[in-house]
Image (cartoon, rainbow, N blue to C red):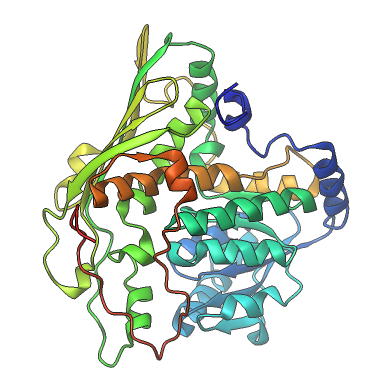
Length: 415
């Protein structure tokens, strides 16, 4: 039993085993979703369009995409056209989005939630994820939410509360940390937890690559439109690379350890990104030393710059009797980004384990956030400090007519 009141196995399987009350609610929810599941998509960019394809795969029967929402009309139109004309008939034949179910604007998600969709896929930039998860659960919808769960501690607490409400209502909640649905990882993590390489002594995780994009501002484009369209380089829209991408690797170690770390001390900087608006206000590299309650350490390295991919994207665990990359003891399975949607649909229908991954993705997101907090402040950050922090970096009011000036690049020791 750890200091947070959960065993390692409990934390690793958060959401798999529900309480009796939640099981009863889930059974009732499953009985109402035995027929065609109506899907809505919030966030119609490349990742959202991909998520729609994943849930419409031929292994999922009786699913139908009926609604789309995005801040930008062009993305809604491109997503709709792409899916309706997909070469895979399972996708094109089950994309049935009428004009009056295409919603555009910063609050388009609210209009989508007023329709009769059963399941919502949320694939918006991270700044919106926490408030969307909260709204989706409040609307009584099952959910797939892309990672990360948010960009600040205030948002993370909203996700945790929403995940608890989802369980009470029997709503299924799958997150985009797809390694949790990848057979190689599942089988390897289980063996590592059973002592396959002896006692775990140290862990290393890497996400090293180039920045995904940095767009120029278009003529006449408002601040909000530009920040949302060019969301990767801005801290309040992406959370920075340690949160937006590196969460995948961090999540694997939290899963292995069965709990989040108790503290982190981090550093980093802006070594390559030029001082231009299109490159935002983020740092381009973070190095973090996370300590877990049992005294073991995870060394975390994430960076965005040309040639940065030399470090790779991977995990490494060293034990008293060997080492592992966290996927070398399992057999290959189907694409985990498809498998997570198969598991979601089966969970909704009561044909498989119940999934509520809200708390675990919130914890792993907060683990990444506290690394950024430590690096930006130059201080060691405790888990409890991060969890209780009132840090909120997303503007309360989002309006295309308001100004959202670029924040200065953080300097440790300065407010």
